[in-house]
Image (cartoon, rainbow, N blue to C red):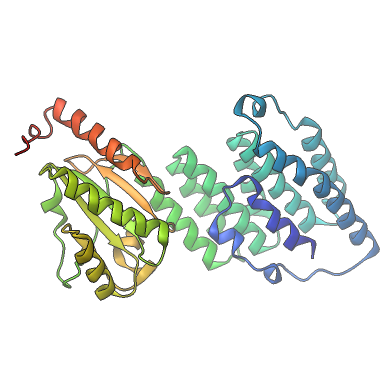
Length: 337
């Protein structure tokens, strides 16, 4: 089916959400074959055959060359396709608009606001609740990138108002509405934390320091590496002004305890055993690992990254420690003995 090919093409330039790419092609509404429809589908396939290689090549261009590209002809071609087939083929036309918004306007040209408007219109007006949800999630991703909390709330309201909607997409929009509050300069949320010993972790006890918060999973090698890196960093620095808190999405608390003991990770580790349904993970709204935050002594977010930080973490921590000490927000660095 053409719809499955289109959805597979969406991640070409990155930025497709898990919720969108996880939707099976079979979830799209059944379509009646007709000569006119087949002709429209063949036309769209021909457009994709030309566009997809162009977009893949674009991704490899130097940034200065990317800025010179306008995709004016490609946008006009898709716009013409949509106008001609909107009445007879609304689902196919909406698919084409989602592709245009995500891959060309939003990703290639970085015209996110224009992309968001197109995706909002699809989310509100297409007859397919699945395609509407996919459009809404892509719009949400762009709004998250822009740090637009109000825009995300309005988008969530728009999709929730549909008579037909998919709960998986509504849940993802709720997550995005929480994630937008995790940007630098925002206050880190108060979390319900349970340690490896089953007892409550008092987050207030971690205030007054530079705090590194890591969301990880031992079965996910990149985030397992981040957990190891964090343990090594705290051991190497031996700085009382630097603390860490880890939030595990592992189902086996004992496995996490043994790995922490092996690494000498003496900092608090939240592990509810409920994986992505754990209270702390749900409160944060994160759906990707590893996720790293740095908080100032008052609990304000200084740094966030939803990807591997690696050895760069040491330099980032040292920079913030020095800045906070210069401002008098942390005690002087202790002398080594």
